[in-house]
Length: 227
Image (tube, rainbow, N blue to C red; front, side):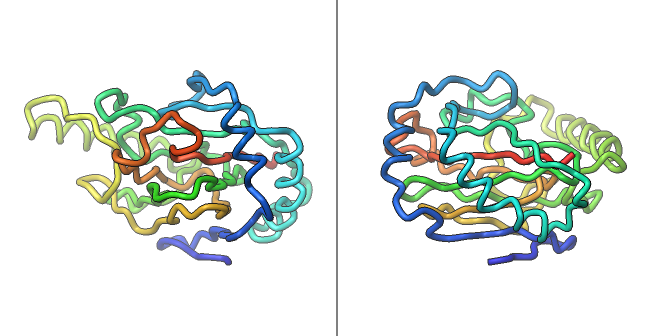
């Protein structure tokens, strides 16, 4: 299914029932050496994806990504950061940057493949619009303006509250961001979207903060950069 989201009408690819059998992948995740991700702000643990699975997923999807997003064929695919992910940080452990929607990179040709793996109720992936600028996607041209405006808003908010804000996951619209769309967590669903979309996990603290790969918000994350 192709879903066009936001004012920008950005395509998001959603494929349900992607794998015939998830049991082997789930078992690999259960035995995987999860550890904190020191290279990103991801608020949890990650472990390497199995090579065979990663190759199969990329081979199946890369031409679709080329076509849907009209990627110039002069650009070549570079897979990056192929990992299992589990949310483990509670709200009081979050850094300020983890309390707001984020983008992965300002590159227009960087894409996230997200595979929901567990059969239980977990938080969706939400897409946000920055209210004062109207931005949904961040690129090299608008990035500095976005950060300047965000800094100004955060300073104004701190003055109004006269104290440091209480850390919390961004799970709904607030003074700076509007939640305009989301992809529900459903086992064996694949979602593909540009990494420069402002997005955040809509964390349910009752079900999502869990380091157990068998019960937590387990996902496979594959990032594709065409350059």
